[in-house]
Length: 331
Ligand code: PBG
Image (cartoon, rainbow, N blue to C red; front, side, top):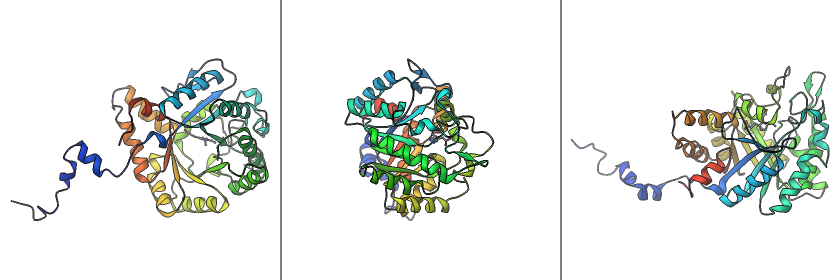
């Protein structure tokens, strides 16, 4: 008995074979849209595997340069750098973050001098530099917004001056995009791109990252006093609109896969590129299942495609290198 929709509608016609499926596919996974995060420490002499992120490393300076060269050869041209700062350089206010001759500033200049074609993203937040592990300065038992802004402003200018193409405040202080944008303009860095972690949720998926950068402690005060509440979607729009008004060029949603609705809402409603961050916990979850042969590697492109389908313009993922090594451009 023929269904009365036939012959007009048979969606399976367009799934006939790969060539046809490719012709009608709506989303592309391109390596030009993937950004590799890398962890680096000045106090080690070779790369060290990260226990909580199997397959990822904490790089020494020299091993980082080798890794970057490999990434560029593979076609991954954008890198987000995160430092692991030795305890001896941390203090209550994260003073080392403001030193224009600190490890990160020197590293950024060196990388840009060697590989001018690279696009370097540096993180603007105090957590790797504070003994508390918080993204800001504590005063009267709170992470003080305005005090922290003064530090972030200086940190962002230093990183821009050193040659970062993109500075990325990930701290979630109110008003930081505005003060950083003004400071960049006034310091002659008017073309530095400002990527705001607009909708950065207070997430339990950041644990492995905190191990990697050594910011695990964050005791007492909760990061929920500045990062976004998991239950809120409308508030992400508010944060995003504020950031655009204050001068952000690109907005980020983080984590990625548990927050596809946020990516979708922001990208549907705003005329700015929305990036997604597939964070450390998402990586570790997948990688452990892959290592145990519970999943095959093909879950990796599936997760990335879901982020693009939701509306991401680009994705920061610990799998950028892996994708470039294993596929040309997949779709
Ligand atoms: C902090 C920062 C975090 C991440 C990026 N920047 C962690 C945090 O807020 O504690 C997490 C990234 C990841 O989990 O991969 N400035």
